Structure formats: C-alpha cells, structure tokens
Length: 154
Image (tube, rainbow, N blue to C red; front, side, top):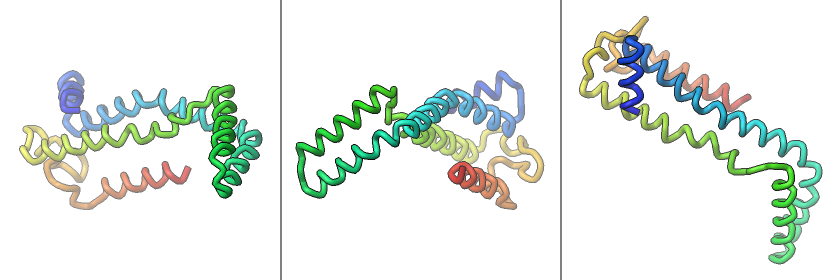
C-alpha cells in the first residue's frame, strides 16, 4: 500500500489528499472485474433458484431426520446444478477481499500521520487542511459511514 500511494503521489504530482483519492480510485477500479463476476454469479443463482429450492428442502428434511446419506445426495444434486449453470459460490466472498486491502491503507495513512510525513501537514483541502490530524468537523467519517450504509442497502 505504501509503494502504491508513494508512486501515485510522485507520478501524478498531486498533493497528498488527491494522491489518496487517486490511489483509492485505482484500487476500486482494479476490483471491478471481481464485482462484475459476483453480479453474474448472483444472476445465475437467481435463475436456478426454482430448481434448487426443492433440493434445499430435501436437504433440510434429511438434516432434521439426521439422515446423512440423503443430506449428501441432496448436496451433490445441488452442487451439480450449480456446476452445470457455471456458478462458483466462492465469488460471494469477493467483497471480503477489500477488508485487508483497505485496512492496510488505513494503517498506512495512520502511520504516515503519526510521523508526520512532509506534505501531510499542509497537503489537505477544504476544511481538512492538515491531514495529520483527525477531521475536526467529523464530516469524512460520516460520509464514509453513509456510503457504506448505502452500499449495503442497495
């Protein structure tokens, strides 16, 4: 993350606030193919749902009866439907991939603010001129929380 942020800052020649925005946009852009694949998987799941529903019920009934053999058969039938439809359920975990990336980005920025890196003290914009201190009006955390809430609601 440090390498990326420093290179974006040097190559673009932008102030630190713009470099942070550009690095974030770059990371998000690189994640788009995964989100498209996730969307495709969700659409395929929706198409096979009517066929998979009876098998899921059979699986639940076998589970309630503690019938391991029929549970395994139902699971195999369900896996066969998903495989024939080109569904890989692992893509549903794709959003979790952003957690370590942006956590690393957060830790990097926090460490840079603690040093402080030259340019962060006066490299801000609007009401947050000093990037080495917390947002005094708490606008950025509210915007961040609101965007996450909107993403989850949609």
